[in-house]
Amino acid sequence: MNKILEITNLCKNYKDFSIKNVNFSLERGYIMGFIGPNGAGKSTIIKLIMNLIKRDSGNINIFGLDNKKNEIAVKERIGFVYDENHFYEDLTVQEMKNIIRPFYSQWDENLFKRYVKDFGLPSKKQIKHLSKGMKMKFSLAIALSHNAELLLMDEPTSGLDPLIRSELLDVLQSLMQDENKSVFFSTHITSDLDKIADYITLVNNGEVILSKTKEELLEEYCVVKGSKDKLDSNIANRFIGIKENQYGFEALSQNKDEILQYLGDSVIIEKPTLEDIMVFSTRRSDQHVSSY
Ligand SMILES: Nc1ncnc2c1ncn2[C@@H]1O[C@H](COP(=O)(O)OP(=O)(O)OP(=O)(O)O)[C@@H](O)[C@H]1O
Picture 1: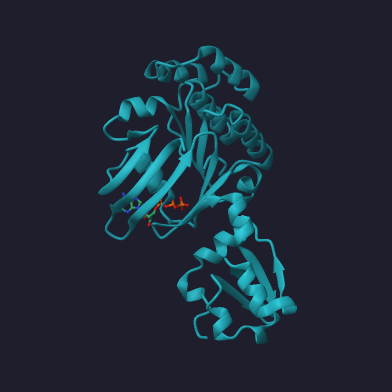
Picture 2: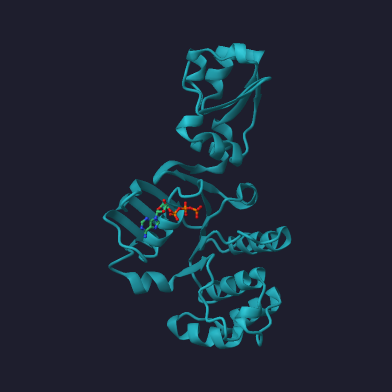
């Protein structure tokens, strides 16, 4: 086991929201997708990892080092990409890079030049005149040019068109050929994770609901579809979430064998998508079927 990121018992309290005893870890050489509904706490956890906000308790180890005690050493080895634009808009791509470069002892100018070429970045253009996709590529080129071992990204694909998203995913996947690197990224677009994620961590209301390999998830969970008369209280309580309409019900189960045993072939059992798992697992409690 070679953990590049390990979070244990992490807590952070705001007035109306808390991160509650969060635990999960990521090993070297893998991509973890970080998902959850709006306001689940993803950005807060990413900010805690980057020590941009203070945790109340718990531990965050990156490369085996505490992220607070070794903040500078740790940040040198992280490529951080986030949605909000954090560059000086009036500077050109080249000028901005020259400001950022001295902060990284491992800066690789040739690598940066290669990304500028590969991404088609206009070096002499002011940042304010770059499209959203170009700004994201510039962020990524910066993050990748100092030999970061961990790429940490908050919603990198949000607002990007499918073509640029697909290019970005290709870049991430090719990074994985270097077994020393790992990627951790939050997203709402679960189909991106279907393509490239090895691990999925799902948060809701400040808590980790699950953190597993994508394969495990898709093996363990199933979507069950059937007519309403099959849905008595005994069965309903075995589901994680249930949607009903006039024709029948659709539900998520974490135990396919159990469903087969109780309902046999009187229902349809299908493989879930990551979106099914996220939506059913995080539906607000007032949407759950609770009156059985
Ligand atoms: N500085 C702060 N003070 C108080 N509450 C905050 C602060 N920052 C975030 N929150 C609250 O924490 C909760 C989680 O927000 P966060 O941005 O982490 O969610 P998220 O999962 O990233 O959401 P989204 O997917 O919409 O970006 C929200 O209810 C938000 O209002």
